[in-house]
Image (cartoon, rainbow over all chains, first blue to last red; front, side):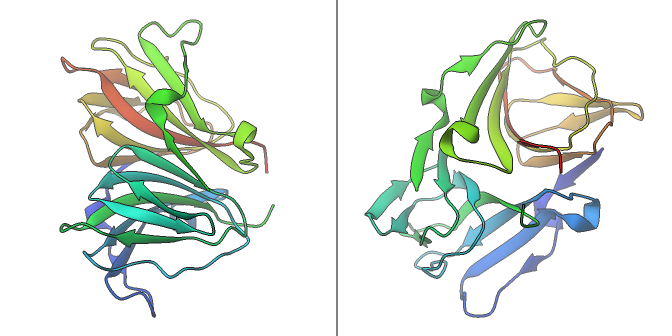
Length: 112
Length: 112
């Protein structure tokens, strides 16, 4: 058992995602063989790219305000919201507020 | 894509867990084939049973205060803490505060 402060896990700042920081809080380096828990920080005005991938995402919004962009349009996201993104579904998360947006995003670590 | 308020998902009150409510927010009924996201509510003074199981747990503590019990003793849990519980590791979560404890607990939905 391991208690972790996500802020203590160094963040990635992925190429092509200005204003987005990703903390891989639980992943294979801790022995998580099935899925990973990440915490994202998105700066005001920043966005994850509009993209899709083979894996699903299970997200929980902690702080800040933004929108989830999908082929169906935009949906408001506020703290306490959960977002279910299916495999291959195009999506982006954009911070529309004035403070950093923080959210959990869990993803599988291997193809089933 | 589906935005969900976890409070809108009816809670289970499992046998033998008085004071514990479990909302299965994302699970196989939404098409999640690899892992599920649940939100737990634990009443003041209540606890999950001290137990172990084949699957790992990835947890994020949202509200309230409590302890994680393991063979190594007790660790304080406060909002923003993440807890990694390995497969077969004995554990319990006990609310030691005066308000409901709320946390996310993700688990795989099948043996790999």
